[in-house]
Image (tube, rainbow, N blue to C red; front, side):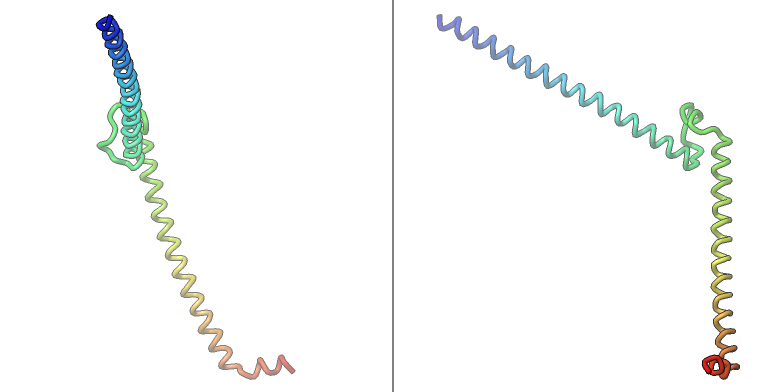
Length: 123
């Protein structure tokens, strides 16, 4: 009678242990699967980023699909044009500052040469 009870308890213990091990294994396999998918996504995104930045060594068959060669050349050309425009803007800014300084100095000279004009307007 005591041995039958121990047998039932042992079977119950083994069943519970197997259930916990199976559940943990299932949970772990889901986590590993999701981690694998996330790593693949990160690798794909890094590859896309390299292609958009113009790295010629990046890519392969998948990289060819992402950005054709003409597209990379177009992006490089647009970057060069953007650089030229930035230089032109800097030149215009410096020219504007020079013109402003010259205007200020001429206005000061004009006011010094005609000091009486301001008093006549007030009368």
